[in-house]
Length: 219
Image 1 (tube, rainbow, N blue to C red):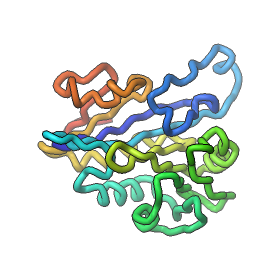
Image 2: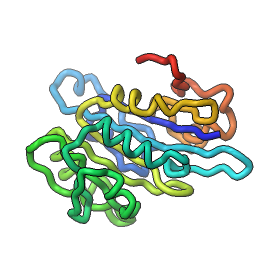
Image 3: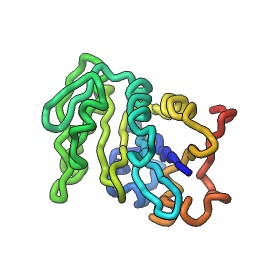
């Protein structure tokens, strides 16, 4: 059995854009003052997967159709080209990913506006240290894709100014079949490792905010 999980969070403030490794930590709550003044907000998405069985594996790349998922992501986001941390650029996302390391990031260039490579994330430099570059790209309309090390490979962490959930929902829904299940998860509900890997202990009764997507599910 293969499980694909799409975690989402919308209308996030600058302070809520915690590092990719902080996906399990609670985001800062918005205050009344935040709602009374115009402040930029952002969306983020975390793509991961599990291969269930006697020896479970965790990571987006454990899915047999991983390459197709990357292609579907590329089509859904419709970037002009992708720019990697080392300065290499390609129109084909897979070409960059198959030679990328898990400390690198990519910018999906969406228009002719300014764009700069995102520094790779290391043990000594996290997202906070490159927040200026990230926000500059997001505010210009581009998307940012971080490669995050999973237990058995890699996961994707996607940031954008625009809410791109509809595009992602429709891109991955066609993969659904009896042995390939799709869960759409409110990221605010998955704030612990135990909840993040709910499929290992309560797959038949997912927690609140963990919704399974079926072939006939509509937005």
